Amino acid sequence: MLKFKNVEEVCESKSITLVVHPAIRLALSGYEESFYEGLRSFLKGESDGIFLLPLQGSYVRLIFSQRHSSGGCPILRVDPVIADELQRIKAAVNISH
Image 1 (spheres, rainbow, N blue to C red):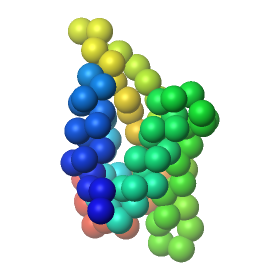
Image 2 (image 1 turned 120 degrees about the vertical axis):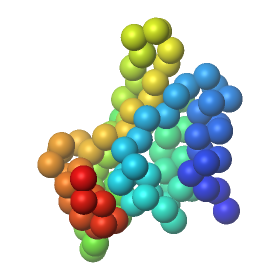
Image 3 (image 1 turned 45 degrees about the vertical axis):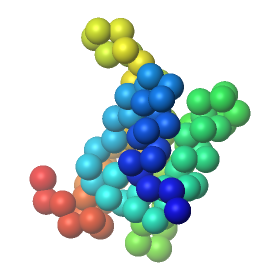
C-alpha cells in the first residue's frame, strides 16, 4: 500500500518539493494511491489538477498548482479550491490551529 511518504519520495526524485498543509496530509490518510494517481496525471498534463478528497460524507476539492520558490526550485502545492474548506479539513482531523 502506498503511503504519503512514498508520494513525497516520488516528488523528490523529480526534484519537486511537495507542499501540503498538515491537516490535508492527515485527511489524505487512506487515499494516498488515488492522490498519487491524480498528482501523476497532473504532472503529465493529463488533468486539470483537481482532486476530490472524501470528507465526512461529502468531498473537498483540492487543487494542485506548480510554482517556484524564491530560490527558483520547483514546488507543487496542494490547497483547497475554496480557502475556507481548510477549516473544515482541520475540524475533521481534529487540528485546532
